[in-house]
Length: 337
Image 1: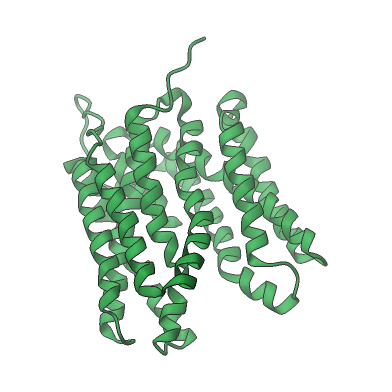
Image 2: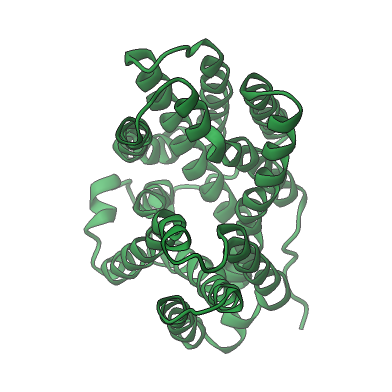
């Protein structure tokens, strides 16, 4: 049986644009160092990151409604301009004050807009019969920058400084914008007799409630090690953050590239539940870790859980949401993370 093609022109362009947008964002894992150089306390650094997160969540309803009403491309273009422009604004931050917070808020809005828009566009170009596999492959565009950005950021900071780091991030954002100009509008046509119900109607939709519950749980779990692994390593002296996320990223990427077809072949639930069990097992291994190799194994187990869990839940969101409200559904889904 012939399967519908997955890697098409628009998929490839959207994947590359998402990758460079992800790279521009991932380089900001070094931002705490910049803020520390400006004299920010740990509490101030946390608050500066926090206001960006709040802005990213607050703007999601408007982004979702704009995606469904005006189409994907206008939102992608606006998001790219805000993202690139806000990165350049970091060059004007010279002290910890209202302007530093304002720049982070603008950046958070740009990131939220692009994250929702690119994933919505990705859903539009994926064939329904291979949607979960497609989400797995499309999601690599977000996982790979995390690994690449750490190395790129270290090199740039060792050779130059934060000014050059921001310019590098802005360049990556500009590449994402240029690539986005080649995309074609792919918003699903309104079916006769249907109407857009809006962002909040999708949030309370009965068929999506179990998905929101599982996605919220997954997001909560992912936050635990993204936030506290640094503290765990420092307090126990076991392993390194790099070891965990290297094995984590490799496992997730290899799984998605090599076995992304598995959920559709045997059923998404049959893969989702074991992947969640693998994620839980990773935390158990961390809890009893006594050596570096335990941290590496935990990274592999957690990477397997994320590698399958996110694309399966993404596919369930798209399949259960009305086509005319797809942008709103994916915007809420990404807001949970």
